[in-house]
Image 1: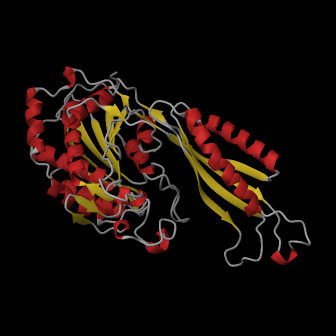
Image 2: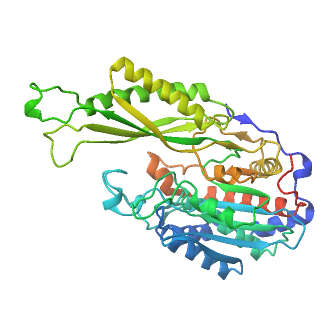
Image 3: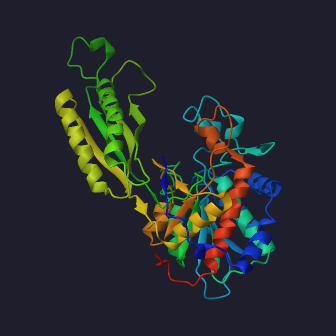
Length: 444
């Protein structure tokens, strides 16, 4: 069962004047228009570290609507797009935020065989529409969400909706949990664009991050990445029976199996609130691909361990160290380990304005009581926003209703009725938040 969040009281409903503005803005939202915006985003490749062309395109599109917007450069090929409208005075500021980078690159040489046996049509930066579903690389995550923010801003402009506080639009580079794709460029992932956007200022009173999941969430997991190295003997197949033999790959296999069995235990011990932090071994390296005759002196793996917002990275280090020390002793495995990075999980109080008001809007659109999604283990730039002191709600699109939906297709197929609904919620939230007095996000 999902967790029921406290519903918004009647005072969170839009007053009649804003209700009319909401209805007028919603009259400018259409599935065809959403499809056009999304196709523009999908057709512009934006792998992590290479988002600049898309950022420029978004900024130009917003500018064409009369919205102040610009490209915000991070490095040569990496940029954010930012925009802002409204702000007649006295109201709270709200950031509507979505990352824009895709985890795969649209390049078969780079993506295969890591992401699949072939670069399917939905894994390419070429959008196509079938009835009410639009396909293409990143069509749902992240670009379907970015398209909803663009559409919401466009609808508000066309409706000449009043905004006492400033509505800010953020399209962030480097939102994927990844290191740089090129050794020539450093620090292109893990929320680098969001952090840069906030550092450039000014800080918004509140934020909504549009990210997968049709329910409002107020907390999410953090992450810690680890590397384990297992040592063995470098030897030759012809000498296996004549010299000391310890195959690092064989020994690493024991480590991988043990970790994969331990991760579910970690999940249950750290399940808390809305989250159920997972773990996975995702990378292994050992030996020389040019020869199968010689064993490596070392084999290494990397794994991702998710952290609930109440677990600090040092506690994860302690648990990992204890587990691996015991494994090394019991299985006579010569190993060492280190943490590569950590991003703590974060929470916004459930009674903060942005959580209550977003839930109120959700319930109004759905005509029912909001139920939060339990057991979450995805980390987003919401952690970056909250770490910078911005109360943040997360809400987004569900997966498209398709048969045989795998991970890739779930990211690459967006259902237009879902997008229309999310856009309406973003419009509602913008009107409700930007037309309330500014309190610096302190409302509880």
